[in-house]
Image (cartoon, rainbow, N blue to C red; front, side, top):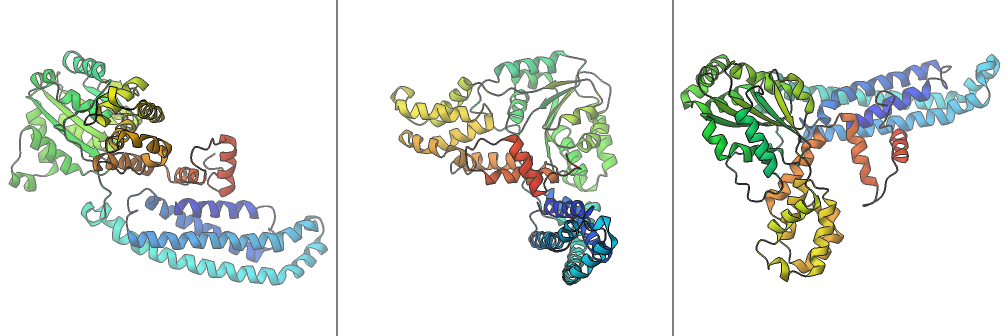
Length: 461
C-alpha cells in the first residue's frame, strides 16, 4: 500500500509541473528531484508490498513514515500550484516576458517558502532511504543467500493426502473422469487442475489420490505441498522421503544433485503418481522436473494451481481441468450436510430458517470454500438464530466465529489471493472498503475515483 501511495504522489507531482511551472527553474528542479526521490523509494517498497516482509514491525513503521512524507510532498506541491503557478497562468506569462518577470517577483516569498519545505522533505526522504537500505541489507541479502529461516514467514496452508473429505458434493463425475485419464490415457503425463482459490482444487486432487483404483494402479505415490514459500532441496527431500525413503543422515548429507539422481533412479523403475499441490511459480516445476524427466510411460503428475500461465512451462502433454462452481442445489445440499448434521431432521427445522439458509447459500455463488465456511458457522448456531446470521451475512463470512479450521481456511485463501495482486492493484482493491456494504458500485465512477486518488496512472491504464 505504501508503494502505491508514494508512486501516486510522484506521478501526480510530475504531471502538475509539466506545463505550469517551467519558468521557476530553481524550485522546479527541487520539486522534480523530490519526484525522483519518491519514485526511488516506491521502487524499493514494492517488494515490501508483495507481502514477503510485510509482518516485520520495523518495516511497518518505516512505511508509515514514508507514507506521511508522500502526503507532505503532495501538500507542498499543492501550495506551489495554488500560490505560484496559478498566478502565472492568470497573467498569461507565456506570452509576455515583462509580466513573467513581475509575476516572479510577486511570487518570490512563496517560492522561497516552498523551496525550503521541499528541501526539508528531501532530507526526510534521505533519512528514510538510509533506514530502508539498512532493512534491505538485513533481510533481502539473507534471502539471496538462501537463508530463508532468517526472515518472518506468512503461514503456509499445508495440505495432506490422508485428510478425510467428510463433506463433498458434486464432484463424483469429476473424480470418475480424471481417474480414467490417469489410468488409461498413456499420452498425457500431467493433469493440471486450475481454478480460483476456494474452488476445490485440493479437495478434488485428494479424492483422486485416495481413490482405490488409483492406489492399486501406481506402485508409489507422493503428495507435495508447494505454496508460495518453498525451498528446492526441501521439495526434493520430501519426494524422496515419500517414495524411496531417506534416512536422517542422508537427509542432511545429500547434495541437491544427489537428491535429483536418487529420485530419478527410483522413479524410472516404478510407475508413480506425484501430486504437486498449490503451485504458484514455474520455478518450482523447473526444480522438480529433472528428477522425474524419464521417458517411461504410465507415471502421472497432478498439479493444482491458480496460475494458468504455469501450464506453458510443462514440457509434457497435459490435460487442463477447471472445476466448476457448485449449483445452487449442490450448495444447499452441502450446507445441510454440515450445518444440520447434529440438529433435528430437516423436516423438523423451521421453514423460516430453511428460507434464510437458502438465501445465504445463494450469496456464496457456488464457491465451495464459501459454502463450507457458511455451513461451519451455521453449524454452531441454533436454527432460530439463522435470521440474525442472514442479516449480517456479508460481514460475518469474513470474520467467522465458528470452528477454527473454517475461519483459517477462508482467511488464508483470501490473503494469498491478495498478496498475489500486483502492487498497484492492492490500493485499488482496498479502496473498495470505503463503500457501504451491499452498495452497487458504478465501474465508471470507481475508475474515476481511482484516478483521482492516484491509484491508476498512465503506466497502468
